[in-house]
Each structure stands twice: as structure tokens, then as C-alpha cells.
Image 1 (spheres, rainbow, N blue to C red):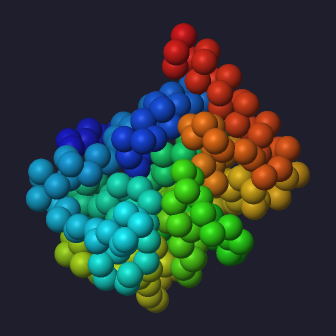
Image 2 (image 1 turned 90 degrees about the vertical axis):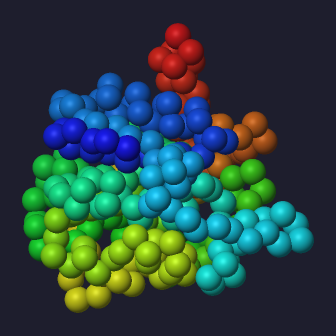
Length: 249
């Protein structure tokens, strides 16, 4: 996955969420004042590059389960997201985003404002999120862990000295709960990005005007999905309108 000198945004890729990736890519480009290198992290590609060899186990229901902590996970980018600093050659700022997001504002703000403090190893929206639902997306099991959803939108300071505490081996053999909770960050601060940059459907304050909507409960890609609140359905309709006008043309 070669990158160029442009700031890079990495998108988690799963074949089931191909339309999410297309919309997210285009929504970033159409709302930004800057130019970015946008790179989907495709699991088979990072495997082929020798960066990823982690394999799931499957329970009797066919659910993918992390072999290291026994917890279920739902997408192909559940762990590959933590390869961002290595894909970015341990240099500069890089943003990771879950595929099921929809950008509605200029993402340059994230780099310019929240990437300015070089003391932070990473920066993210620090949700206090304990989902009540047992399922998400297309019937996938909902997993609860410390710092839930922090890892879904992360600005990585890839050349921070403490970044060396995370290794490619860690990404492949550490428990998912250890990775998603950023337990390796330790003594260094985690920068705080406002919630409007990772606004969670069904959870975040309905009075907030989100700059980036995150369809954590499934969203418009899944035909049987229904928003928990009217505002969630409104953003889903906005996503569908964007998809019809811009992607399908």
C-alpha cells in the first residue's frame, strides 16, 4: 500500500461495506479544503504484504471470535486498523476511520486543530459508550470493552517516540480488548476530539450537529436496519440521497 506525501486517511474495508467506503471517500473529498491520500485498508492486501497474519476462530453459530480474548468481532478491519502507523511509515499524522461513517464537514480541521499537539500519541473522540443492544449491524454480536468506539476514529501521531511501544506483532497476537482500549499508550496523553467528529447513531446527543455521522448500529447499507431515533433515520436518508446523487449518478 504505497502512500505519497499527502496527508493520509485510512478507511477500514470490509466487502460487505463496499458502498459505505465509496460514500465515505467521496464525502471526504467533496467537503474538504485540502487534498488527501485516501487508502482503504484491505485485509488480503496487508496479509500479502506480510503485515497481518491474525486469524479468527468461529463458534457454533459461525460468529468470528478473537482467539486471544474470546470476544466476537464483526468486520475485517477490527484489527487491521492498528497497522496505520506502519502503513504510514511511522511518519507524520494519519487518520483512521471506520467505513460506516459519513463526513458532513471539512476534515482538515481534524489534522490542523487536533493534530497540533505533538505530545499526544493519538487523538480520538473519548466516548463513554456502553451499548444496551446485544446485536449490531446485520445481526453481529455486540462486544463491550473499555473505551468502546474510541478506535473507530483515530488521529495517529505516527512519529511519536511512544509509538514504538506498539509493534506489528502486537497487532497480530494481542487481545482485541487490549488494542481497542489503547492499553499500550500508557504514560502519554490521548488527545480529545469533540464528539461531532464521531457522532454515534442511537447514542450521541441528538442536539449536536455532527460533522461526521457514524452508523454504529448498521445504518442504510443494511436493508433491515431501522434507526432507533428519528434523527438517526434523518441522517440515513441524507446518506442515501448522497449515494443516489453522487455515487450512482
